[in-house]
Image (cartoon, rainbow, N blue to C red; front, side, top):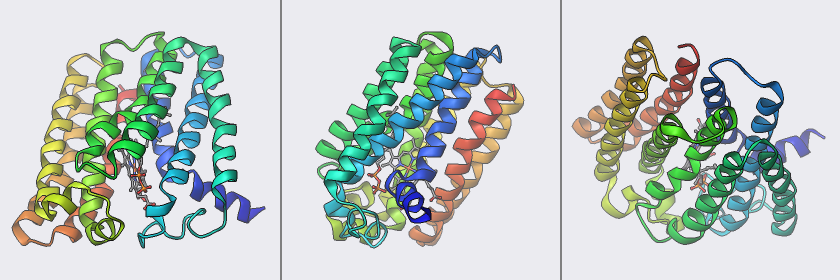
Length: 283
Ligand code: HEM
Ligand SMILES: CC(C)=CCC/C(C)=C/CC/C(C)=C/COP(=O)(O)OP(=O)(O)O
């Protein structure tokens, strides 16, 4: 039984999926302005969880060949032989379809967010761009923003300006998230032939790209404060948290130790994502 759970946690990338869910949960709570319709909340949260893990499962099936070439990913369920592609696809379908049906029961926008999340992640990012473009994550990031849009729409009935800003926040943040990680794992990505930014343009470009994206994240965070979704205290704390990865990336540029400081930035950038949504709810 434990092995089955371990297998599912690995196959569904549980740490990533839980932070994606976190953005959806808190986007709903902020949109509901704490007047939460329990059924809509439950259905929206369950829908986001199921569509996110279902989408992740299909990404795992499609990426099995490159996952077997990277040290970071070669022990994953399919490349390690713990799960075959057919069962992986069926398992992913078995959670994705109920997730989308649940979304439809909340409202059409939650359903649209789920479908767009799946299509952008699987078709645009995984199938079309990841193996071809150093800017794949600029587009793939919008898949990552769909849980936040879906959560907001689950509570309010439509995307709205704040919902779009939350989508943008996560979409832009995704580039820092992956470019810092890909700078750290640049040799691994080279081995698998995945043209991430630092592979194609060098580690320094990976750090510079991450810095530019971080500054855009700060700008969108300020926009979220301007539309009244984040308090001034929340904005100040969010920007203070962002200052940490910025300082790490500046250290990377000064020292030339791109991998070491990029990994530190990666870890703190993940913390920022969790913190900023929590701060919105605390408003
Ligand atoms: C284009 C979009 C994205 C790409 C390409 C991407 C890629 C990755 C990769 C390669 C890892 C390392 C996985 C491993 O080696 O186990 C990772 C981990 C993770 N991702 Fe993403 N991700 C994206 C979007 C997101 C989004 C939107 C979120 C949450 C809102 C997120 C949350 C996480 C978390 C929490 C982890 C685990 C971090 C850790 O191990 O400390 N990711 N992601
Ligand atoms: C609402 C909904 C369905 C949203 C979908 C959200 C979602 C699953 C976003 C993940 C973002 C993404 C493209 C990850 C792929 O990473 P990767 O394959 O490059 O990472 P890896 O190298 O670790 O496999």
